[in-house]
Structure formats: C-alpha cells, structure tokens
Length: 123
Image 1 (spheres, rainbow, N blue to C red):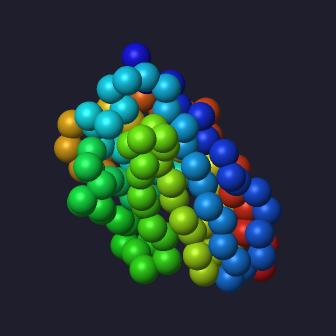
Image 2: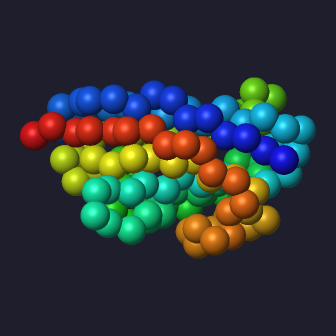
C-alpha cells in the first residue's frame, strides 16, 4: 500500500512559480510511474505530467509543456512538479498519483491518489 501527501500549493500571481511535492510512504514507491493531475471547479480531472519509475522518461500535457517540469527522488520517496510561467487557467486542485506500471496520462492506470493541494493563479 502506498500513501501520497501533496504540499506546496498556494496563491501566486500570473507569471510566477510554485513547486509541488508529493511524499510517498511505502517501500514500493520506486517501482512505479508517478503522475500529476489537476481538477478545476466544474471540470473533469485532467492529466498534467507523468514520470517513469527511474525518472528517465517524462510525459506532459500540451497545455503545460515547456512550463512545468516533473522530477522524482526515489531515495526520498518524493515526486515534484516545478511550475513556471503560471497562468490563471492553471488554477485547480493538483493531485499526485502513483502505482502506474507505465508512464501514462490515463488516470485509471494509477492505483494511488493524494488528497490534493490547491493552486490559485491570480491575473
């Protein structure tokens, strides 16, 4: 079993940056791909970024490509999402996801989810 806890969300002005962290419990963390998803009010949860178990492969939604960077530190059981050049449309609750066997944008491939952290970008 893996538990995920996100942190690092907050309020930032457009053009600013935030770094989200996702701390995982459980010894199997490093075996699985990890991902970040987000959900804005009234919208479905959408894929943001994913990273392979080794960190050697990453995958981004077109809407964040070039602005966001996903990374992981398996020694610390932590995955990160560095978000730069933030836009008001990035406002959402951001969720960490784990347990996927491949680096995927499909949310049902992930077995474990965090509770989410709010990111609000003001214009």
